[in-house]
Image 1 (cartoon, rainbow, N blue to C red):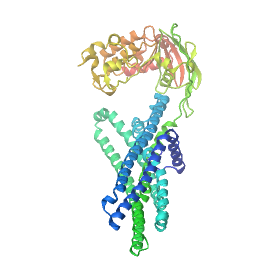
Image 2 (cartoon, rainbow, N blue to C red; image 1 turned 135 degrees about the horizontal axis):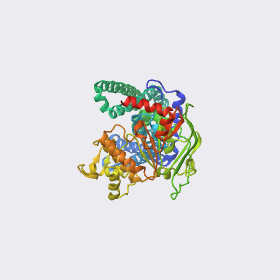
Image 3 (cartoon, one colour; image 1 turned 90 degrees about the vertical axis):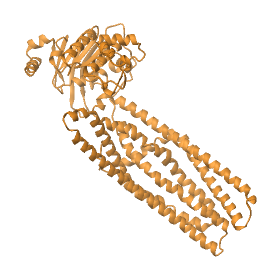
Image 4 (cartoon, rainbow, N blue to C red; image 1 turned 180 degrees about the vertical axis):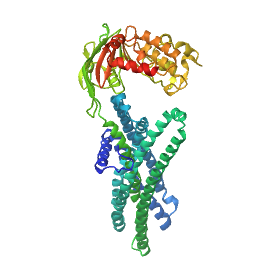
Length: 589
């Protein structure tokens, strides 16, 4: 992403503008209604000015009473009601257009982020993504609801007014025709500077949102390291920088409005002066002069409004940069598999000479070849960066192998229906995620319709039922985001209950007993032993004393499986695992 202070290249700005315009076709109907209603409203405005001029001329110049002009007054009331109705139609149609685009963009963003998967989101800042999905999409509102309809009306309404002004007073029409282009000219001239400031502001907003989110997530750590005051100072500096950026944008916006108002006011004054002198010298009748004078401010109003809404365009372009960045993030190749795994045969997983490399071309896994089946427990060990996490992501389906195949019951995972494959997997990470809601809802995440008896049985198998019953409202107790209000061991046991309830044939663990007290670790180890029965289990281990019960241990190093066997066999072999074990025992001692 470009730095917050770097100006956006002109080609990028044009591309983003074209991207925004490309969504018009899906909302052409409501936008057309808004523009058509606005055009009719403009014609009624001309009629309103003419009727008002007729009334004032008849009463003030010709000395007629109100009884002589009642039919014109009724016409004025009808015009007022008609224009009010049209304004409501314009607002409703413009809102519908903007809502459709925002809904579609938000749906596409969610779908694309989901397709990118956890492997991508781990490399991004959560606050920046959240800001783009929420505030970035909302910034599209005024572009489609106000700017686009106004660009069409800024052309039609002045031309329609000129068509009535020229027959009434060609001099005033000529003044309007000459001065009108000055407004969009200065609007674009000043808007170029504001556009650059707006784009910079959106980048700063994304950076600020990401930083705030990180600070909130790590607040406990900051407190423990007595760094919260320092971080608060950084937050204050970022906020002040954003405030100055916002004020710079507003300064240019106010300058733009001032120039537009000044040009419109001077132009109207010129029309009024010319009409006034000609009325004074008797070169012009009152009725056409007053009619033109009433229309003069309305002639410049659509142009001034477009100048105001021009900032909506700049804001939308600034926000679109982040949206397009996410939408253009490449998704790993996916095959629309439709095959479902047979349920009447034991699950067997095979990595058939699998290799994988990230975009930079650096290989992460090379020639991974092993298999395991239902009822067998496999442990993955190795130093950080050996490729253990990448291997599990491939198995979970978050990424696809660069070469080789992953087979389930002899079927390539590329050909297996994604939803059906995920139903076969229970995932228990080192730090499980609990969502804001009740304990009951968190356990039955994969089976929302499961009854309470099934949930309680799953919790009992996970050694969680006792502590859940002691909570203030039992299974209906509300927990905060990420399990706020529960201990690490309680969160882990609720996640285990979730895995028992899902009853998947494949269980993937990532050091599920890390950072726990001995008593809780013993309870979770006992639950995992139950969970492993009659299931295929792949466990990523960072502590070697947790892999002793594995049927087979795979030792990974630099993306390769360098050893495999049982704990005793690998110790006897005296290879990498034996050295890791000796080092681990020394550190533990």
